[in-house]
Image 1 (tube, protein in one colour):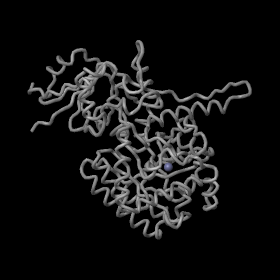
Image 2 (cartoon, protein in one colour; image 1 turned 60 degrees about the vertical axis):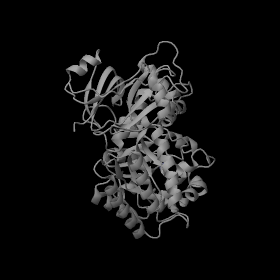
Image 3 (cartoon, helix red, strand yellow; image 1 turned 90 degrees about the vertical axis):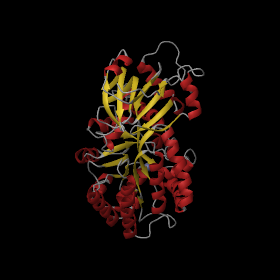
Image 4 (cartoon, helix red, strand yellow; image 1 turned 180 degrees about the horizontal axis):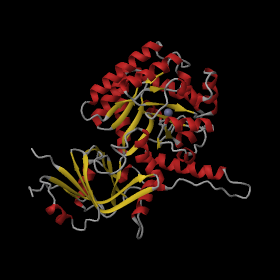
Length: 475
Ligand SMILES: [Zn+2]
């Protein structure tokens, strides 16, 4: 049987680097087996293009006037069990917040059925918001962690999933029985996840020491060994809050600073990424740069937990990989659009803080195109997936969002450029503007089918989804 190709015709917006946004009009994107096999520009006549092409079996998807494709959004840091209380309990700073809200809530995931129900809603919600790739923290419970993997597998998200490790400085009701038990369960989780991922390998286990405070030296060393043995990525938290930093450093007095704790335990490197990195000395920044460790920038969380304002430009200027994270539920929103907006505010806030007595500041704020980069290709780089996802380069997987900028909460008034429509979506848009969500070519979420049918008819919505689903004969 001949594989059906999908041909997308219309406007494409993506980034090639942090400084290079590309808008392609009259683009033709050909997807086969979930992979982008061709990208052509300025194709005036799609019918003529198709009749001269060699595809034998295809479906043509035409994007409407206010529609465009962007790469799927990448969330480099989210806690799946915490979605349960996202948007509540935001009155406390990190360490109190963990003890008052987070640990009691996460401990409920001992109940496998509860976990399964919660995870189904969580992953569904993230996909609906356009997060095609997510790096998840789960909990310490092996059975519940497996249910998260099952859920992600069933719903079709690309994901890194971590069983959380905690063997010290944790409440009695939410701590692993022993260091060895923590390592043993992690190995079982890795084996389970790798087997579940199967051939398409959308899901990858990620070694996940919660943070240095809750992990002993033998545990961190053992986890570093596991990551090495299985060649897996590592994720954790770093320099989020002044009290946390003080506590972590007091536990490891032989280490030069918080970042050095992870370094001394073999946990930094090109396959490692750390959430936050808000309060970093120059030595720590240099250590991240020399080890090629990435950073998940979670501005909503940094504001909500009063942690501080991360200086993304400082990280980028040292060549450090940076992506965006929702950090649900330290951050209250499951949407990377929100991470773009809070990242935008953090950057503006940095400039405000740095003003001198005359109101001047040389600080250069992040631009919308740079924020789109962080939300897509930047996140892919943090996860080591830059050769697979992040933009529409030929040979990459088709992880994409089909955006209609003229829907939901967005009004397009007058003549707007494509870039202005993109900005409107980034700052005023919502899941309502995301018509289709694709992971490796497969539609995994989007507007509900009934609404989609209406859109396809073009009768009810002004600029509906102009889909031409007719399978053409061989040409
Ligand atoms: Zn976190």
